Amino acid sequence: MIAVCQQPNYFPWLGYLEQCARAEKLVILDSVQWIRRGLQHRAKILPHRTSPQDFLWISLPILGHGHREVPLKNILLDPNASWAEHHWKTLVAIYGKRPLFKSQFEPLLRPWFEQADRYKTLLEVTVSSMELCFGFLDLKPEIKFSSHLNERGSKTERLISLCQSVGADTYYSGLASSSYLDTQALRDADIRLVWQRWKASPYEQGTQNFRSHLSVLDAIANVPVGEIQDWMSIKPWGPFGDLNSLVMGNNAPGTEK
Image 1: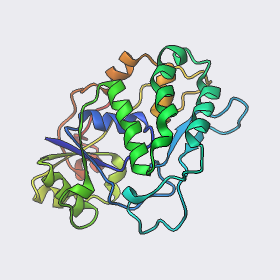
Image 2: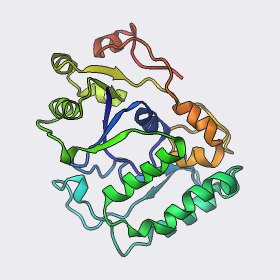
Image 3: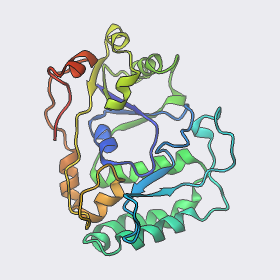
Image 4: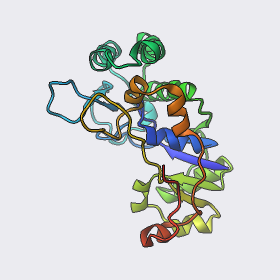
């Protein structure tokens, strides 16, 4: 039983979705603090052709300030901001001439953006955007919310309690977590830790150099759905291991694309 615990992301990048593809249980961390500089409320896309930047953000409008102690599930969107219309117009301007815009991008995403103003909270809109991607890519993780589970402690302790709450014996983690995860505590709790080693496959973006870690929106405009689904399909991964094997470079767990 493989679990992934993640904060919800607005139209996440492909690596996030690959974790979801392997997860039997996806625990949405809605009880934690919203990260102002994180990816919960914004998606990274290609910039306009005349821009010197490498990427452009499309961001959800958060209502008010002072959210430091407010859990993510309670963060409200600004009801006076026409963000959905603005985001769609931006996407049309950037991706409207890409090869799969008319056949794949627009039919999937335009109806969603036309109805997106109905969402009142950050949690609602981010989870909805993720579920749209899950349906498109035929991903079927069972979603649970941390606020509904028996979570306790912080960082690794919380992770252990969440895995136990959903009956998971394996946790699939991004490498960024290696800076704080207590691998010994996971072993003591009989939870196997697997580090993600997935890499995005380069594809034609209409730019001189491939830009990785963009939102899945970029791939939807450029790559046939079957090919993206193949990237998400479960591939054999190396031996399960811990942080020591990763650092030492021996039997590093995970899978290389």
